[in-house]
Image 1: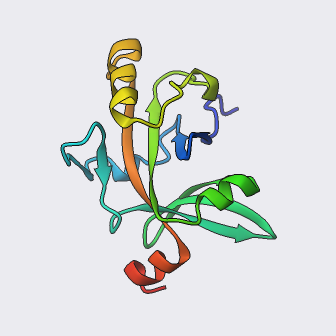
Image 2 (image 1 turned 30 degrees about the horizontal axis):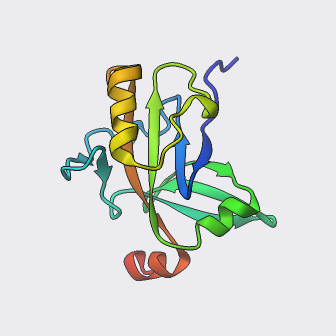
Length: 143
């Protein structure tokens, strides 16, 4: 039996945060880049999130050119929110973090401070991934 919770997302303001508990993204370890921002990021050419429609249901999919890491069903409001290209913060805690326990701010500096002071950076990692709209996906990935 698998005791590891499944990835989920939450929306804070107009920002999307994905929480991953297992090692779904372990293949990308070491790809993080320090851009001087509160969170490191993964280059959009290495891995990204995109919206896919499967059997009339919308999913948020974490992927690379040759692999889909995981998908999460998303509701219509979230689907609408994803009509523009943006970054998605992925939190990887080593404990069961509930959506309601995440600091309710879309200010990345405040979120980083919350992690550093309330949780401890050894207990949770945060990385920003690109989200590609259909148009951006065609432009950057020639699909």
